[in-house]
Image 1 (cartoon, rainbow, N blue to C red):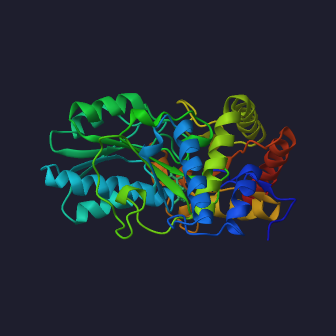
Image 2: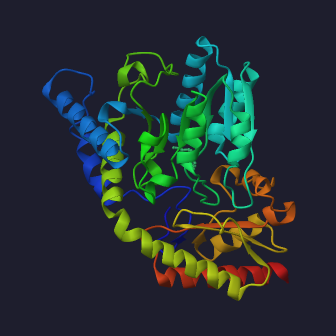
Length: 381
Ligand code: PLP
């Protein structure tokens, strides 16, 4: 169970449920349990809640409510974007998929699968900060490209991509542009009208797990992955996760409302954490500090230290941290993101990711620095 003394610095993996989300969800977990597709009063109430959430998300990301397709996760939203667009484009004679090399597995593995079923997949490299190479992208996109998928911001390092330029390159070839904005939404004012398809996930912004959304810009044609009762304009059949969607809407609304006032202080604490780690411990290399980054991300490699034992020692000291992306925990393979950025294999396996939340304090930062410094001393003995 949750230990109240745990210092949680893994907000990129997931975030605690916001009180606004919990309060909005509660009635729909209890008396208001009706199926939102039914006709009686309590069902109409559930339906109304979903439409409010749709408006909250749309307003937060510069979309129209009718462009929102609620899904079962961010991973599903990415799958729907890539497979849905690829399937439709194939009918138009387009078979190219272009992705960035640092994409989350939700995009990378989907593209890999599309490659196995006959699509041409090109993977575009990044510079030392994780920013996608626009020259390489221009060269990879052609008149047969169906979709370009480059994330808004990276989950491991926090690197923010030049989305407007990437969109221009995709559009010049009349290809669709999809962006995975799962990590970006908490700290950046994501304008989804820059892309044709944009993926989000509730649990990264203080909403519940198991809810996501894909913004499908008006006029963008994709095929559904899940066929059935025809919910979400036929793009995502299944009985609505009423409470989950309503919690997502409430969380997004709260995040968008507070963003401009809380982000600068998160960024200040992040910079302090990074500077202190460098000052207190020898052989610390900051990954991806030379490009625009999400406010809460610190990713450092510490010479001579293996990521996994460090995480376990930090856990023992009550600090929840990550050695890379959560999906890679338990694997000894170095992060594909750091390797793509040109970080050496030994340094890539010694990566520590600390991701701050909007509730992180100065005292938390000091405690984290001491815990990491102590753990490194023990591991270097
Ligand atoms: N995309 C990115 C960039 C992520 O960080 C994550 C979660 O780790 C996902 C997609 C997957 O989202 P979900 O956990 O909702 O499936």
